[in-house]
Image (cartoon, rainbow, N blue to C red; front, side, top):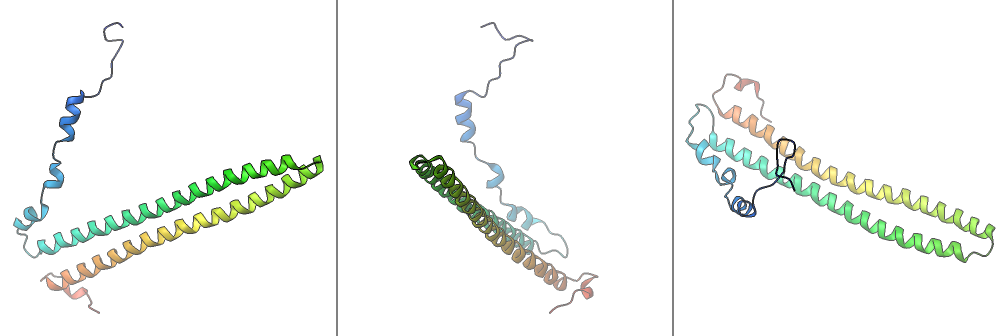
Amino acid sequence: MPPPGPSRRVLRGPAPQESVLMANQPDFMFDFDFSKYLGDLKVPGLDMEALVSSQRRNLEALTQVNKTALDGMQAVMKRQAEILRQLVEEASQAAQDIVKAETPQDKLSRQTELTKEAFEKTVSNLRELMEMMAKSNTEVADVLNSRVGQILDEARDLVAKQQLPFKDLVKKD
């Protein structure tokens, strides 16, 4: 093999030792405690502890949304795998049924029946999968709607608690 030159480049990744070293490096982004940093900031009229607490709840809601979406997606994928397994079994049985038919007319008749059954089953399976996805999407939207409502309540309470010029615009229920 000719040595690499301007017309020939060799693409290489990091050496194996470098990969191991990189994998063992701590992730400083996740080790950093934002609440300590923000707690030391003194902004007049702003409750940093409430802000940090609100952001923590936002992250918890986001985590719940991701988990709910992932669970829904896994359920759909599991059902799709079951449908595929059933489809293969039914196709094998259908082929045997068609071969067993004695006359060409019987074969055509059986093939027509099987095609109709397969179409109806496909429509049924699609409806089931769509309902599963809609249920998962509704669960995700419920978590998001709940958190957005909480955020708006927190903002209203924060404005009402602070001595801000637009405090009179906020109505408490």
